[in-house]
Each structure stands twice: as C-alpha cells, then as structure tokens.
Image 1 (cartoon, helix red, strand yellow):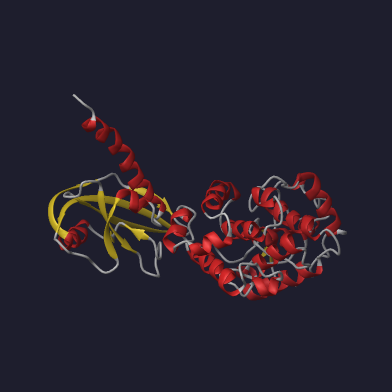
Image 2 (cartoon, one colour):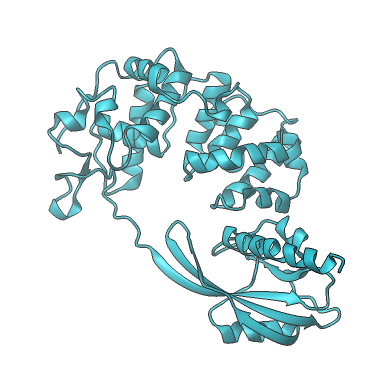
Length: 382
C-alpha cells in the first residue's frame, strides 16, 4: 500500500489562523457557551445543511428556550416543531436526552465528553463538540466535514472496511489536536469542510493547505479512494472520500387517505400515528395505502362515504427514497363512537399542532389557507 503522506506541516496552527480570518463567526449557536444551545445545534446539523437549520433553530429555541422547557413538553409538541427537518429519530432522542438531563443530572449538562456520550442521541463526535465548545475539553471531533478534510489533507485512503477507515481517521484526529486554541481549531475543521473542502467542486485556492495538501502533492486533482475493482491498494482520483458506492435511490408511490368529517362544525380530519419503523416513524399522518381501492376500503371502516376526489400528485424526497404522494380526499359521516387503535379525528388546528410529516403538513396548511376566504365570505353580511 502506498504509505500515508505526513500531511501539511503545522496543521493546527495554520487552521486556527485561517478560521480567525475566514471562518464562520456569526452562527446563532456561537453566541456564548450555553451547552443547551450548542447541543441543539449539533443535533440539528446532523445530516442537515446549515441553511436549513438556520430556519428551524430560532423557532425551536423560542418554543423551548431551555432544557427544562424541552423536557416538560410532550413528544408530540417536540415533533411538531421538528416537522420538516427529517430524521425524526433525532427529535425523539433530543426529547429523551432533555428528560435524562433534568431527571438524572438536575437539569445540568455533564461537563465531559465521556459523560455526555452516555445520553440519548449523543455520539462520540457530538459529545466532543459540546465538551470542547462549552467546557474547553481537549478532545477530537469527526463529523462528515472533518472526515473529508482529514482524508484529503493527509491522504487517508478509503477502506473496504468502514470500521478500519473510521479507526484510522479517529487516530489521526486525536494526533492532530493542538495544545491551545481548541475551540478555534475545532470550529476551523467544521468551517473548512463546510465552505472550502466541499464534497464536490472544492475551493482549493481558498484552502490554507493548498500548497501541501497530501492529495494534491501526490498528483491528484481530486481526493483519492481505494478502487476494489483494481485491487485493494490501487489509488484512483475521485472527490468522493469513500470507496463504498452511493445507495441507489428508490421510488415509492402512496395514496394518502384524506378523510374529512362532514358533520363537524369545523374542518376535521382523520389521522393515524405511524409505527416505530418505516418512513416517518412515530409521526401522525394521513393513512398511507398502495392503491385507491385499499384507501377506500379503510375509509368505509371509519363511517359512511358521501363522496371522494383526487388531488394532484406531490413529490417528496427523503434520504434515499423519492416519494410520490396522491391525496384521496373522502367525505365521511363517522359512525358514532368509532375509533381505531392509533387513530383519531382532529380539528385542523389541533392536527397542525401535532408532529406531522412535512408533505402532509404542507397539504393541510394549504387547505386551511384556501378555506379562510370562503369562511370569511360566508360570514360576511349581505
């Protein structure tokens, strides 16, 4: 195997200097060392772009300004605020973690990465980030951006074994830690990966290591990876830092049963809570079916049908699935006392206060907005 390059000299010092001049300094969670705010940002930023998090972070903080407020809420309230951020397991772990902190730690965040890692939803890198930024602990992080920076700057080849590759990167991350300026160094790694050393079309002329990045010194215009087809130690240029192929995107089509209670004074719809597995686990949702016939049979179990119509198909992209959703609106006179395990009738405002999948929330909000002018017209005097 081609030996690993030593990487840029004085790596930490140069990174800290770069961060102070060119790094990000105006992100809302950088204002102070409150572990609640830093923890919230770290969880939101997992697999989510900063531009998206910037829209959700202030709203979430306004609704839950402290870990005590978050722990005292219901899971549905938390999921409602999270709706649209995706990866809802993060929100449920966030809620569980807040309760752990309040019930087991007196509402005070543990101060070490080791202790933080024992809490729900906090892995090794997230625990280190909180401990570094809030308590000045000397520890390494290794999120996606940092993996990319270290892999390229020090020519760490991707491995056929994810565990082997991860172990090598953790060892390198620990070796590179500076004796001083740990917060600026850690933030610099995040910033460099997010704004310069990007997955594709990186801005190498803006990088503090452009002159001695190991990948560039080796003569590649792109990050190396191991190509299994050419042998376990063959180098191939590729901006992807992993030899593992990207997962192929799947496509799924669903019919959304949009059942409305025609006897209710206000807009009232039927929702069911999703199971613990599959898409949108644990969220309230319009029931999903593989066909119109299945949806209508289910609707007949809720009451007497008096009409139905189809709405335009909408599309929604998840991490590895492209969804095609066809809302089937059904007017129903509910059978008195009819309830179903995991489902219930909700007035529209109450439904919108629940944790809903983003496309379902958008559909219901659009319907609510369209109905307001009609309601106002009916209520207006002749």
